[in-house]
Image 1 (cartoon, one colour):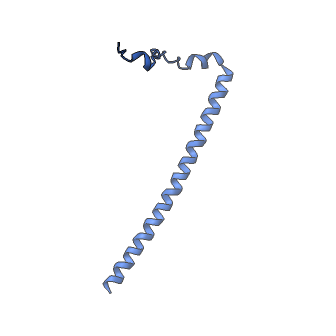
Image 2 (cartoon, helix red, strand yellow; image 1 turned 30 degrees about the vertical axis):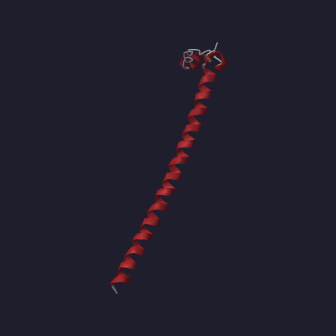
Image 3 (cartoon, helix red, strand yellow; image 1 turned 90 degrees about the horizontal axis):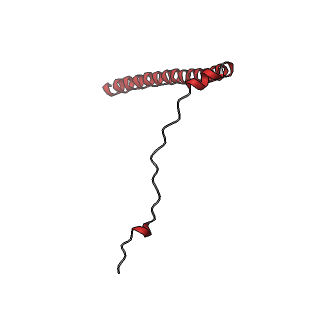
Length: 84
């Protein structure tokens, strides 16, 4: 009899956990959808602003990265020791 009660309690806990997981899944899906809509609207508004005032958009643009140190190509054959 005790085993049946434990099995019933375990079943109830499993159903509660399943319901909670589904609810959290729906909330996460709604939050993800809201995030992408907000990102889309932000990008659209930013492009509209850059069309209205192109000088300001260029001023806000990040400066190009500094050029890296250039490394010359050295063929391995020139590094071989010459036996003579």
